[in-house]
Amino acid sequence: TPLPTAETPLPTAELHLHIEGTLEPELAFALAARNGVRLPYADTEALRRAYRFEDLQSFLDLYYELMGVLHTVQDFEDLADAYLARAAAQGVRHAEIFFDPQAHTARGVPIGTVIEGLGRALDRSEERHGVSTRLIMCFLRDESAESALATLEAATPYLHRLTGVGLDSAEVGHPPAKFAEVYAAAGALGLRKVAHAGEEGPPAYITEALDVLGVERIDHGLRAMEDPALVDRLVRDRVPLTLCPLSNVRLRAVAELADHPLPAMLAAGLLVTVNSDDPAYFGGYAGDNYDAVREALRLAPEQLRELAANSFRAAFLEDDEERRTR
Ligand code: ADE
Ligand code: ZN
Image (cartoon, rainbow, N blue to C red):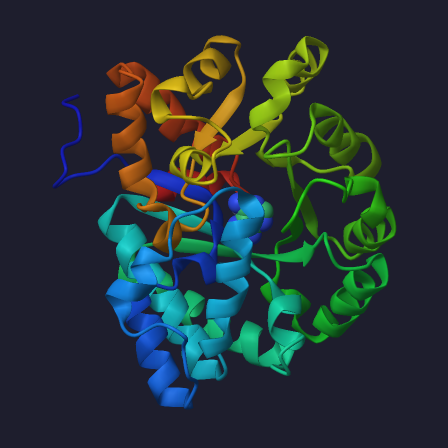
């Protein structure tokens, strides 16, 4: 089969995507105007110039500040619908979408507003964009374990909308074991489990996320390569890793894309996938990430096809759904 071109991108599943990280400057200003929020940037160009990050924390500071424009059900619906349209145009057929309820409830936005708004966009996604969806609720690891438990409790009226739970925000100093109780409770409710680990934090956090939280997928997992025994385990147990190459460059987890361990990870037999993380901030959506690694890492067509196949294998799809999506 011929290689997909820009007009017919490779069909993929996106498994690591923060919906708040899809807030483009234009939509941020539009929502600010709609809600009477003042942004401390003159215009979209000035805002874009602020997108220079030293590390994860310097990004998170802007990410949390900008979400202050999100207030109503309509805002969250518009945000998610805009993402789904862009993702579809880049070949995404299935999207498992993270959201950060605590970043909104802390500002006085009820969790129901967030889930209802996202849910409205997701309900229409297959029909409008040809993208099937799942919703994964993330706990902020730099907040307390009690706050995570209260968030799970607050989400119980909306459980039917959630497929799983995740763990994100500032990693170093916030090891997975801090959230053992809330992950056990989420598992008892029938929710799937993933967690960010090994983005800036050590490989030991990946091991802990598997052993203590019982996660099925690792988000990032970039630093797994520092621990050969862990790599063996991830290969043996077919644990998917949701890599985000452009994010890693922008947040300086890797010096440049040509240095990314993706080819070594594929060669080691790891079930790696390519994703966009926070595309509005990191310079590209899913297809842009595939294009960037193809060029910088000189990936062969069969490696690109393996990455795309991995994305569907690692998704929380039923077998019959997976056949239809591909
Ligand atoms: N929240 C949004 N993007 C994130 C990332 N790459 N790592 C941790 N938390 C995040
Ligand atoms: Zn992430």
